[in-house]
Length: 401
Ligand SMILES: [Zn+2]
Image (cartoon, rainbow, N blue to C red; front, side, top):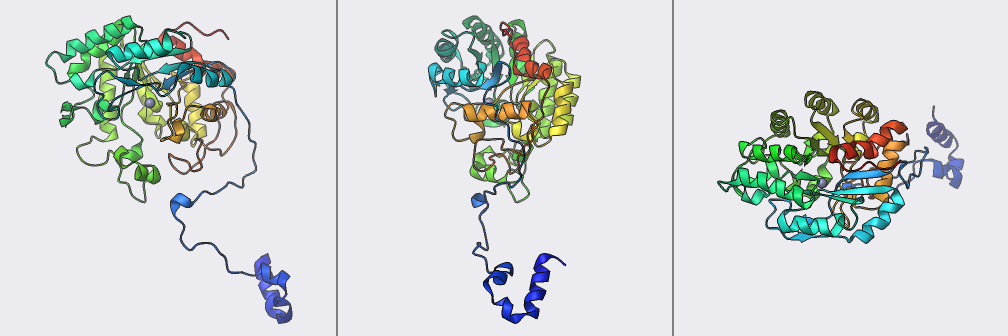
C-alpha cells in the first residue's frame, strides 16, 4: 500500500479527519493544469541533479572548420551573382574568439570572383592566422556549354586569390537543376564537375562538402517525425516527396565522387551528412581514405549516442575536424548562433562527461526534443580534433601548443 492509498483508507475510516486541511491536501485535489498543452508551450525543466561543468575556454586552441561569415544572394537555392553580405566585422568576432580560445575561423561561404576577393580582403588579409576563406563554385552557370573547363579554371583563380579550399553547399543534389532553377535536378556525380574536383586536388584545395540533410527531413512532417517542430517551423527544409532523391541516393552519388577522385581531399560536413547512422559514416570512412568529417550542427546527434560517438572519435581521431556551422547573428537557427554560449556546449560535449544538457542555447531543443551527454575525450584526441587535423587538411601553419 503506498502513501496515497493509505491516506485515502485512513480518511474513509475517519470522516471527521478527512475534512481537516492537512489530509485534504494529501488527497487528490483538483488541479489547475490545462487539459491540453500545445507542444510549443511545453518546456519541461529537468529535475536531474548531476554534475554541470563550465567550459568557457577550450583546453587547446581551436580551428572552427565550419563557419559562415558571408553570404551570396539566393544562398539557399542557387547562389546568383558575386555580391556578398557580411553579418559581422572581424573586430566583433575576434573578441569572442579570444575569450573562448578559438584561434582560427574557416569561412566556408567565401563566394565567387569579386565577392571572394572581398571576403579575403575583409577577414583573411588583415588577420591571416585568424581567418581563412573557402571559395564556392558558380552553380548559376552550370548549364553553359563551356562550364566544365571554366569552373576548373575558376578554382585555379580562387587558389591564386588566396582561397584555402572549396565549399559545396547542398545546392548540388537538392536545388541545382538542368536549367539552373527549373528542369530535372543535376546529380552530385554529374561528369561536368569532374574537372572541378580534379582542379581542387591540383591546387591543394580541400573540398568541404554538404550533401543531403538530417534523415527526418526526407520523411513526412507528421506525428512520427522526430524533428516535427523544426520542420513545422521551416516547411521549406523538407525534402520529402516531389522529385527529390532519397538521402541514401544522395550519399551513394557522393561516394561515387569520392571514389572517382582519390587525390581530392573531401571533408564531409555535418558528420558525413549522416550523423544518425555512425555505422554508415564509418563504412564510408573505411572505404574512402580521401574522406574526412566535420561535426557542425550535429552535436545534438552525437551527444544523444555518447557511447557510439566516443568509439567513433577513438577510431577516426585523425579524420574528424571541429566545426560548429556558426553564423554571426544567425538567430533563425539557435544551434548556430556564433557566440560564447554555442562554443561552450561543443567544448562541454568533447571535454566532459556531463550528462543530459542542452545541445543548443535555446529554451526548447531546436533540432528534436532530447538532451545530450559529454564524451570526455583524452587530451591527445582533443588536440587532433580541435586543430591538428584541420591544420593538415588545409595546409595552414601548425598552431603552437
Ligand atoms: Zn554550414
